[in-house]
Image (cartoon, rainbow, N blue to C red; front, side, top):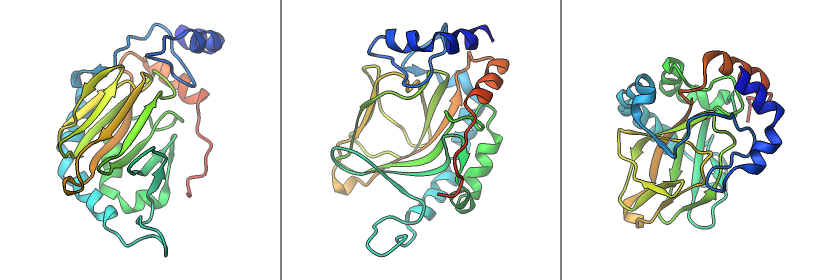
Length: 235
């Protein structure tokens, strides 16, 4: 609990003094081990559960991705969100957005919702917690940016991974793999791109935010209280 108190008390100093390679935008918990990528072993239970759920999650993605457009003039099915990119397209389908379940999306994805409920370290009651399907079309680039905090690890389960797709975190490149998880600290400067052609199809991952393994249970409870979500669950 001392770290949380120190982090809240001195947050301005911590955020302003961080090196450019790791600079969370909202909250920095001091004295927390950090690295761009983490071994799957640090959250083995949840990683293995997600990977075992790969067929079900892929099937559920297919079901929501190939629905008719939500409205006339739209190219996207219901529930999908368009994100800003300098080139290409980046679409997300949130089940949980900043700690708040999106009820209509959850109803369309009962299997994914069950998987989230079985995870031990999913950040479920906190604005730092998200879960979504994320799609990058060929040619898309997500420019360099920082996540909001270092208390979480972002987990990507590869669902569809064409060639020429890459995630770069803290200057370290990694490639996704279908059916496997990547764990990374998104408070590090990071970017992603899909340099394949139209014939390769989109890159698709199932993304969930897990607690950093060195954030203690009491600290998690305190952070849930401080960063309680208050958004409308109906998009």
